[in-house]
Image: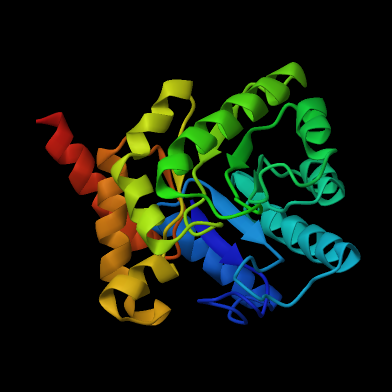
Length: 252
C-alpha cells in the first residue's frame, strides 16, 4: 500500500503532492514500483497536526480521487479518513477501501462501509488513558473482537486489522507489539502494518524521518515474519524488493 498524502502537514512528505501534476506523477510512480493499493489522505494524523475541517477534507478527497481514477481507472484506491460522510462520498466516487485510523470515532462509519460492502481497515487507536504493557495486547484483542462483531452485524465481510503503531502507544509498546504481531492472526483477517518512517524508528536510531528508510525496511521484514499481509509505506520500490526477497526465501 503506497501512501499519498495530499496535505501540506504530513510528518514526512507534507507539501510534496498538492498539485494535480505532482499527484498524478506520484501515483504513476508507485504503481510502476509495485503498489497494489494507493492510500490517499487529506488530513495529517501526526501529533499536533493542523486541524482540517470536514468540508475541506471532503472537497480535497473528491477532487483528487476523481483525478486519479480518470487517469488510472484500474487503480485500487483506499481513502484514509475517520469521517463517515467523507467515506460515503469517496466510495460513491470509486474508492475501493476505507482506512479509518480512528478505530471507531465516527458512529456512522460502520453503517457506511456496511451499506457499500467495501473493505474496511479497523485500526486500534488508544485515545483513552495510557495502557500498561501488560494491558496492551489483551485490551487490543478485546477492541478488535468487539468491533469485528459490530462490523459483521452491519454486513461488512472484508476487514483488515491495523494494530495502530504509534497511535496511543509508547515506543517500548510499539516494539513489543511488533514482537507479538502474529497474535492478531487469531481473527483470520489480513493484518496491515504501517511503520513507515515513524518516530518509533527515530527514537531508537537517533534519525530523522528522511533518514529512516533502513529502519523501515527492517521493521517491515519483521512484520512479514509475523504474518503481516499489507505493508503501508512511503517507499514502494524498496518495500516491493523486500517483499520479493521474503517470498523467494519462503518458497524454497
